[in-house]
Length: 217
Ligand SMILES: [Zn+2]
Ligand SMILES: [Zn+2]
Image 1 (tube, rainbow, N blue to C red):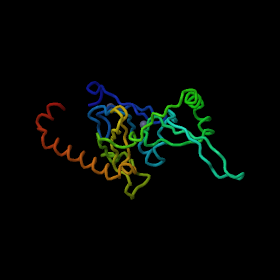
Image 2 (spheres, rainbow, N blue to C red; image 1 turned 30 degrees about the horizontal axis):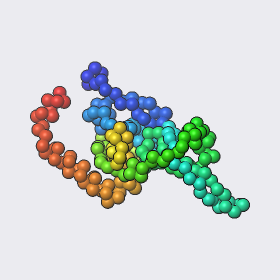
Image 3 (cartoon, rainbow, N blue to C red; image 1 turned 90 degrees about the vertical axis):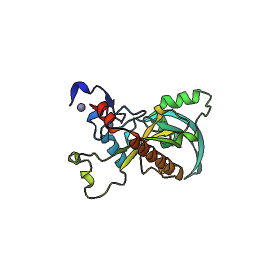
């Protein structure tokens, strides 16, 4: 069931990963290529253990700048900071980082940002979930993979990921987010989850199993 029938591949967007998978061979399998950024299970595991920034290739773009006053030995010291977006991560994971650090990580981005007239186009709504498109189980259905052997016995605190479409951004910017993320626990997000489950329930009861079988064979 490998080979010629399966022609579509999905390449992982995780840092240093570049693994390519047949959609049908994934566990759980993917029926079609999902929109937006996608991480394989190995990268998702890294994400749950080390945080989402562990799977990013680094700073992608600068969206804002500010000056903050920090207490220091000589009293108060001013520090210039930039608001940065990371490759492969949604805007909700943006950080303010000091200029000194960013000059080491991405000097050309700093130069480019400061050359331009610095019109701030950033919108806070980009960090608000607009619609939940898909849900995926993080634990493979085949337990032989030993996915959670490192934490045998304890129940992982995060069982699902949601494919989130963000407010004001297109589907190509959709990202998979761990269900325990704070922004998925707001009352607005909880109602999006209920909406998703209702849609799924309706779709299941409306679909004719004989038609589904024909499509799959
Ligand atoms: Zn395969
Ligand atoms: Zn990966």
